Image (tube, rainbow, N blue to C red):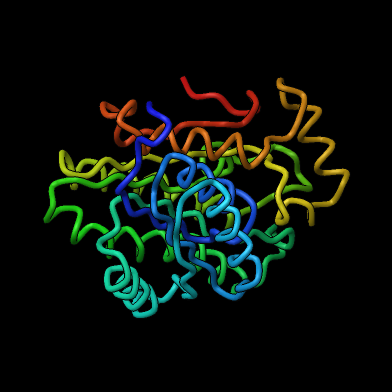
Length: 255
């Protein structure tokens, strides 16, 4: 991988205003990509991400859209295409979690988590695939979670809707990899506990239990996930598609 391998490429990162999304934006910018930063309501944070991209020597743009709506997603892609051109690289990172997501979860919370986590992924992939298939080239990484691979065994930490949505993202990505190949490579990243704004809302007792069970002895950083995401989008991962790559410090492993 060269330092500016992605020069001339147009990347879209959903949920790019903070956390893992921001780190991915910065990493792709450092590799030379022009980065479209999607956010739903955090314009100031997205503008800060853009400033950090420019500090990496690249450019990009900020695009507000609720990507759980296909119509809003379609309009956002249209704006990116008008401003810069079709998206070459897509990272679907937008998502939510709730620590009320347990056996007493209200139906409305189930619908909200599935809508944001799964529909956002589908809408962006489905819109991006059009130009990628037409050009015969595209690379997609969907951010899932280890909760999509292995439900937690800690009774107080059930995440039923979240885990279901992340399992569905993995299944969706695998099926798209087969359907879109060889033109488009589609892979998943399944992070463990990562130190972001979202996980800082986690009860401290839960956080400490997870870290104590993690062989690496720490939470991940957004940069840990960004580096893996960049690898999957790079030429170095040219023979990888339909895969789920776990970055959990050893908390969850695949056979």
